[in-house]
Length: 354
Image (cartoon, rainbow, N blue to C red; front, side, top):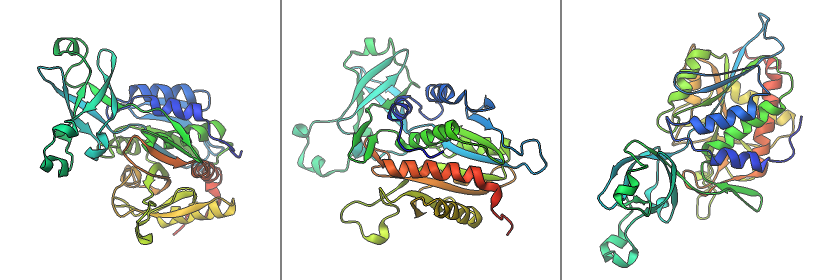
């Protein structure tokens, strides 16, 4: 089945659902609602990974293999560490932040109830000349809930999580919002489960936890599943902005799905790389090679966990990663979905012998 358009309402639901690392309950519940009618089995492991099984035509045969597809569902976030005498909330980051991107942003504190706040810092009018030149640091920021300490403490405690607030919008041929890393991959996996036709092998769709703090959930899931083949779905850097040398561009928006070859944590199995390339070429899908010199994804956990697997990744080119304006091209998303579906449906046709 060829998917022709993006379900914006579904993607919006997925990006809006809170899911700080280690606290993925809300996004997990949303995914469960979306996929429950399209899978044969569904379970949650002790760490919180959601694992959905879609059985293949060889499921009861000695020819059966296990294919794991991973899309981490956590998002970069914060945790409350202190409430000062004026009611301002201090926090610790959960995942990688560029502090300067926090200026003038809204957040949601998930205490006894959700509370909207703003990330505050010193106004430029009050900065010294030296302070204006200084690069912002995380300690310069605090959350302002607009309430005194005694009111804040009725609802907020140390250890509560904080997520960023930003609605999804369409801009030209792109989509922009927070947490497209990695909710765009979650969306692709959900859409694949909904539309996937018969597959030769059992497909384990894993919506994993705690990727942003160390690739943790996928490693546990891989140990339990012990897949023969594994495909990671995640965003990747574009670096296709003005004044960037051509050799520094990792991928480009609108040029198709990314097929990972290497990142700082993984050298993808050449067989999986060749299989994904051949599948894309066979079906006339746009793709681009991804060689990422810095940063890594759950591909590393998928490759090394359990008994080891033939692993690779389908990467969605994304601008402005780890900001609230992350941006993907609609056609890249569609091509990524089409490639994943085609790969899962024809995995038994490829010669995997070395």
